[in-house]
Image (cartoon, one colour):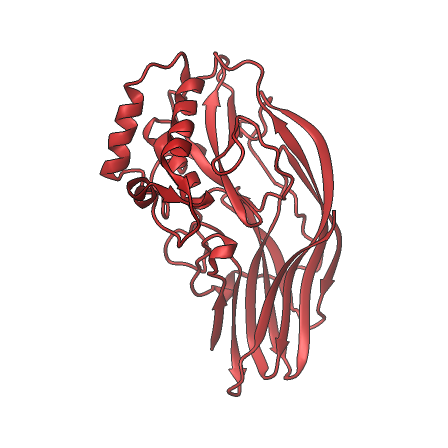
Length: 335
């Protein structure tokens, strides 16, 4: 059996294990690639305190191309696809589904990601199978709120937010060093909770140098005083969680940044972005790269333990010694 799971650091720490084929059902119709939020209380749907400006559209091709010198059977693969967010709209333009595909569907992963699952009984040697989607992704800049002094750390954390308040892979919020820094920051004067979170943001940018390297825990980046966008984002998220502020990671191609959650005077919750590495952007975001996922603790059938990022996954049985060549495609076509 051949298994291939993307783990390259350039794809931001993706780790998965074996797959569960039994969960795949036959679907002849096209699944939507849009967000499916069922609760009107979801903070991503509430009346926003943010403004969205200057939208731009890009065309992306995403999927799997399997080129194999050996016959493959029982092919099972998954790959993530972008979804709708308040600042992003995804529209499916076209799809290429190989005729040998017998089952495929799109599934939600904890409301923060979407994943295509597919099954192919047999791919003959020296042939190519393709399952790709071409989609238009419109994304807007996020402008900061004009009023912030009424924003508060939530007193009660609902079920959907709890996952953003504790440890996640590589976000060791319960680490003693992180807790110590959190207490030091909490002892500082702050005019309001918005300023409290901004102190966390500035602390990380002032105390962690931007240096590329291997993926490590947030606490290690704090101790060493260096890290890349992933470690800096992880540390901001960890310190926010220690301050009782729900926080999560946002993943875009070759980059990530944090979002934190505060409530207004009416109890409406809002997610606010900030740029951990690079140009200072607190409460705003000028990125146009598409949002791939939001979150940092996902449960997927392909892994026995929670994963930081919903990654691509491939497995098959092969008849011969040669290795199949699955290529997961994520390419900018236009824009």
